[in-house]
Length: 147
Image 1 (cartoon, rainbow, N blue to C red):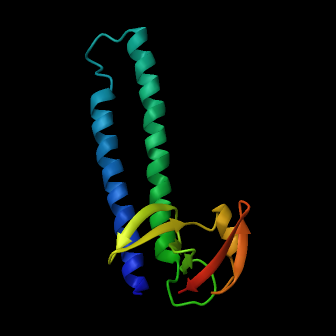
Image 2 (image 1 turned 180 degrees about the horizontal axis):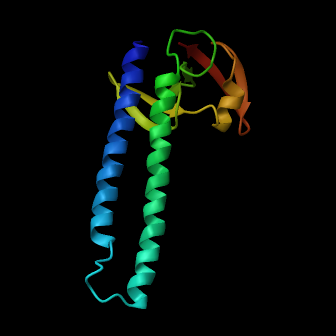
């Protein structure tokens, strides 16, 4: 399993997310900025304040994904036999990459999900090796492989 390919896929996913967020944010702002040449009433000001709050939430999400990108670039994806950041972990037939939260993505026909060290399941996985078992949410799991 080429972990550098997986790292690159994570980077590309974050870059696409950041680009899309920037485009969406710019389009949103273009349609919601007040034109100072128009007459502005209380209703316009109210909508403008709501738009600003919505815009701030865009900024927060954008910064979150920029942070994800920085985290991916800091993590070592070197081979490992212990669950830690950069590890690929197979558990009950599912592959997780310990890096940043990411919904299912596919590389070379294999599905992965990204989890961060803040994920509740990571607490149970951290430091374990292939063959180790653990219980999470009342269910038993076995680690099949760690790369």
